Length: 283
Ligand code: PEP
Ligand code: MN
Image 1: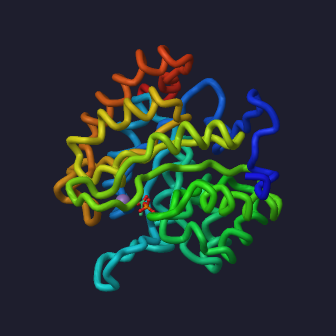
Image 2: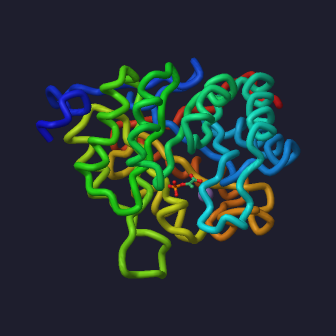
Image 3: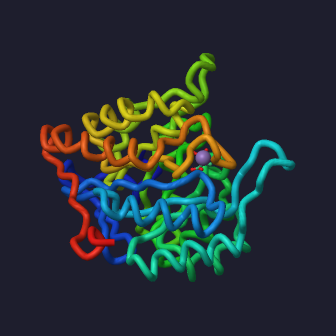
């Protein structure tokens, strides 16, 4: 990994702690738990998600407004209208929001409305996009490519870091393999290796790895046990009605149960799941 000088650890205690929206951190002692739907569908859906999750140890809300869909005929996301829904939530509820950026032209609108810009698996090696994200202030959540080696993943992060943005969070989300029972194979070995090789926070997305909701809670707990700095999990008020990734979405109560179950595991590996902020718990 000599060719990734900025991403590489200088010594075993070297860690980057990334601050999100001024209220949450990732990479330090406290875990970052992110929840929300695959796609922002309407204001009512996001209101239900954010008000319920704000009562849980969930520090940020996710929701795609530009969706990388396999078929061009599938729902492509609400675009700017979706960004306004996310911005309204973050301002009223003071909870940070994360959303995927797919193109350089979307960056200027996104930095005005969201706290963290996500680069999806399909764009992990979109080098021009990575360079442009290296020039913004907001943190970038970089997801591992569908079939990217760890070296390719770390070098993708290096593109962002070397263009000036040092706020990069890595996300293991499963890699393609031969078995179709799970959507992807969650590579927890990669989580351990990335924590050893880099100083960057590493979070895990068990939803896209599993592709089936019944596998998500156990994979989430395994990820924390393996040393992940946090989780990003898809959940929806009515999972079966999700416009995308319905099969892997938890309902909101399942999400709350899952995050509560992380507490003893986090404690066992010297980490903490932080409780909701008091002012949000009364919503
Ligand atoms: C997503 O987070 O909704 C998504 C499309 O994930 P990935 O890029 O990991 O497939
Ligand atoms: Mn999804």
